[in-house]
Length: 289
Length: 348
View (tube, rainbow over the protein chains, first blue to last red):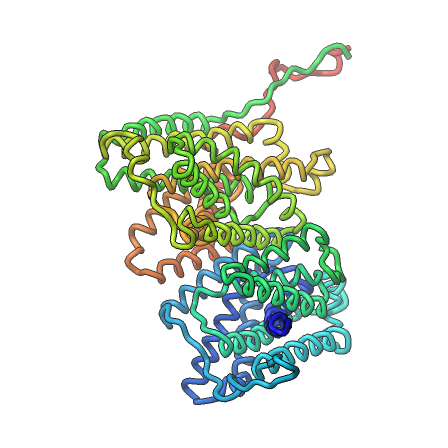
């Protein structure tokens, strides 16, 4: 029994990481209806940026966030302004294919620069510290920090969306882009800010991913899929929904892995497909598709 | 009132008559390839033909029906695995297995469509990718087919196809040519039919098509199932050529989707000629740049982005718009049978 409680608890904690993958994806979809196929590869890019920062400056991975987050946000702003804004319009193909091309470029660029070797960020003692919270139930400090950060990120995004001028601009462009423009909003800038914010979240997710497990240039697409599944499970457009979606995905994978290691990913996908079949709008939908 | 305007719909134009003539010549040359090409040339041509077929099918799906899938590797891999399963477990002749794999994959595609069609636009794209991942993970659970490490086609089954290695290579090459021609002919026939007119309308404007009474979802479903049918047959053929299959090669997103998208975008999406031109460019780039390793893929991604942004209709799109060419008779134009202009007094 406690064994299963442990499994579920680990699943919940990893769900926080998936929620961070999902939040960035959901944010830009909400604001500009853009699905970024390169999202997973950008997470991996953030992990490599953190690797460079920690190696050259000798910083602790968690401290490196102070540099990685702004760096990724700037990349996001530039990416949107210079490239992705050109793809937006009624036609669905250009953003999809351009981000698909971007995904190939990032993967192979990283491969060229860093080879296919697995890397990992070393966070020191914090990685191995665990606390007993009940008989036979243990929580690692790092997974706990990761989950707490995920909750904080989602709460912050929620605040930003509903309490700030930038959030109002996001919601206005999301509701009606041309009216927002008529009201004096520069949508090109608003979209670029949304992408900057999305990649700031990606940076946090990337660093935690890199501390938690090995990474190499090819693992991006799988992270995109996890994020996407969490978005759809949680319901489009709902920030807290993405957290629930991430947790459900994490728990499904943990239970699948406990039954048979080969079933870890499969269990997550199957739960996603079942939810798509019985409740296609997701568990906590906000906007319709 | 009684007098009717006589007209008929013509597809052919001067360029399409030239185009059809040229295609006939090229097909003759290709059919005779075993007599003028060496072994390496045959292999290259067969691979090129399978990519023409895969890209044409993806073009039908994405370019005409607006179903941008990044998960067609699901059906390539399914076709491959069905062939290996039938040959290894049931002793079916490999060539027969190709033709059985098609309908089975089409049947599988119906429940897949029922799920993925719930997602719109770009989310549909990622949904199809999840399905392909599920297929890959399931394939690695099937231990009789080698699980995660894959399996080779038994030598006995290979020898049963033809006694000598040369005869086998000729057979496979002609099979690739025949299947590709079959796929292309099916697409052309579809596009010239009523459904084709509906598809072209959907391609140009989905809302307008729907308001003209086209059942858009039904047409899309038909295209999705037909594409799965063709893609699985080509997939079966590809892995019959490779003689070995594993989950990672069968369901590879790079090989069966990224390359195929690149080919279609470069050549010209939404036009039948696009994938053919694109495949030739892709193979030319691959032969010249493959020494660069991962840089070559990086260049490919960059070229795809540049084309998508600055020439979204691809190379053939540029040509077709500039000169009004079409290589195959697909456009429709009205031809009035009596050329004399009608006037009111004549009718009165």
